[in-house]
Every structure is written in C-alpha cells, then in structure tokens.
Length: 148
Image (cartoon, rainbow, N blue to C red; front, side, top):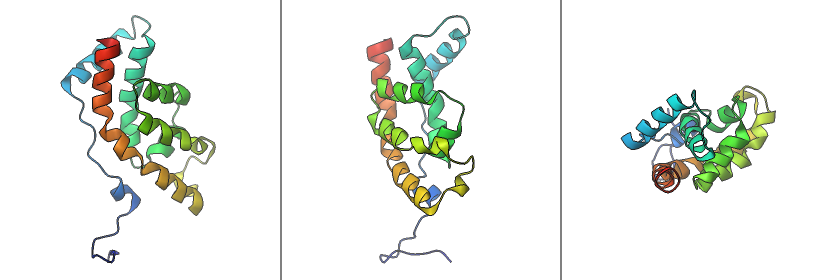
C-alpha cells in the first residue's frame, strides 16, 4: 500500500519525484554534436565546441536515478564540465553541481550516505528539472551566438 498526502495524492519516492522525460535534442544539435565528435579525432576543439560536447554528454548522467552522485563518481573533468554549463548560460544547473561537490569525496555507493546526506542531496536534486527544462533553448542560443 502506498502513502498518501492529505489531499489524497500519492507520496512519490525520490526517483519518481524527479522523473522527467529525457531531453530530446533537436536535429540541429544532434548533427552538430556528431560532426564535432568526429572532428575531435582530427583537430583540437575550441573551448565553445568542447563545452557543447560536455553538456551534451553530461545530460544523460543528470537524468539518471543517481544523477549528481553518479556525476561526482564519474571520471570526467568535473570542473571543466561545470565551466561548460556556465559558458552556455545554464546557471540553474551550475548551482546544484557546485552544491553537490561533496559527493565526490563520498562512498562509491549512494546507499552508504547518511540520512542527512541523502536528504541534502535530494533537496539539491530538486533544482535539476527546472535547469534541464531550459537547456535546449540555452544550447540553441549558444550555438547561434558562439558557433554560428
């Protein structure tokens, strides 16, 4: 039996609470990313091009069940990725990324977090859906202005 709020609505578990449709990138972005990925073997990408790839490659991690924990446990260059989100103007994602830095020094298993850590991380993760919702528009604007 599931729990209910006073108004009768169901209380959601954290993964359900943050569940949102995965970002579906417009074809223009997909084509550009594919081109940059293939060119990256042949030449050094500009900072703006690298930022676009960082953002594109990080979004699936932020959409995953372990989102911020998974991001900080990954082998990416965390500061570069955060700077990439900042460069494209996604401050609504930069703030939670920075606020969750402490996850990088914690256990590989999210289940090992204390109740306080779990609650704090969940509160930070509540900010992600709004930032992800505006990301496509920010990326399109960034492409037009910086990579045009």
